[in-house]
Image 1 (cartoon, rainbow, N blue to C red):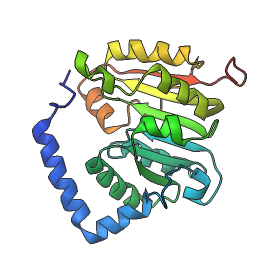
Image 2 (image 1 turned 60 degrees about the vertical axis):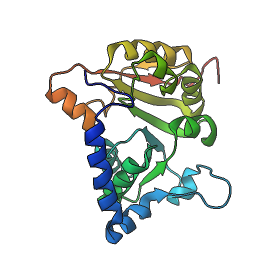
Image 3 (image 1 turned 90 degrees about the vertical axis):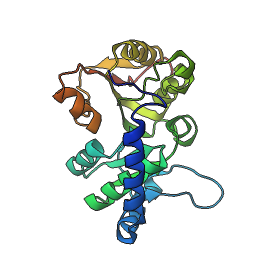
Length: 230
């Protein structure tokens, strides 16, 4: 498997950084990206989907949306739902925003934020219809484990923020990481769902893995309509 963490793809990263700077430096492209890039107003940053979209509709969130290959397709497929693409890196977020803006979809927004902050602090209880979390960095080195997205508190917050009956979809290319994530989600109160994770083979990362014949480990986790935590 390709090396991950701070040293992963150093030279390709610099190339992406330069490309993103060129894209964002184009006034027309930047204007298109800013149409969908959600920015805070005032001193308090909150996530209020009805205000973001100007309507009430089921909300699906992709954490770590990358260049948006999956969420753009998903938003076009389900115009009656609202979609939020979340990224932390400013470089990736700018490319993502331009691509989402060019898609011309009224039901798609981009947010630059640490996903842990979003899920733990910004989202109301039972406000999300689906989470899509595909190929989070496994941070394989022992000293970097603290940077991993999935922790028991994060799984508990995912459970709190999804509606009863809603699903969190997860995929990774790392068997050992799947072996940690999946039991963590069950311990938080989720149950395994039969639905396939729709983005497990449709993200940019996934398409590379599948084309190379690498295994993908995916699962879907549903919040029961009645549960011990509800």
